Length: 309
Image (tube, rainbow, N blue to C red):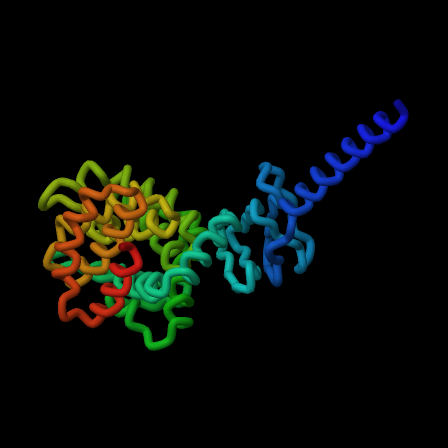
């Protein structure tokens, strides 16, 4: 009798030991806050309980969420990757891990994303030429020029200055912007800085505010086509393939002859592959292959096709 009782207690102890070990594994740190300025808040385990970060070295877990104030900035290390967290951001560590994993497992992914970041400022033929004003530095440059800076750091600096202006400006008048433009500009900045979560909500708001005119020929806001492309790519970066396909298709249907339609088509195809929409995949395979014939990235696209067979 005593042996059975002892055996039972042993199994109970083992059960709770394994349960505790599993919990510890779930809470295993995947990175840390390496530096920050201003107010930085951390929800360590993703349960909605934010506490202010007091000093660098704070551990980060898979479910952690970081939030920065309007003038704050932080640098973090996650799975050996250094990431910058910009002002006014809400960032999920799990999303960062997912994105970095995709970059490392798909040799074509990172170069294509870099290309798309650099071409999203393109002003489409026939549209009003609108200047991207970096008011913080009193620079004035066109979107087209912005994405042809020789140094990536200079590009990021200009975008960050614009973001800070938009976050800090208290006297902006709605009359100064077309419907959705203010949200678009902020979302655009976050997108270019790689903060796709912050960009998502703003770009969605811009789309909702401008959608009444964006789909009306001859009555579109100046940023309509850029919005379709940026929003599509942004959804793709967050692995939201349904919305990525929707907006990328909108962009392509309006810019079929645009040289950047090839890159958007590639992401549209991969979105359909991830959605397992085989009929559409077969339909687009031929179209996208034609776009990449004799293209400078023909070999990379061919390698991608081999990978999805």
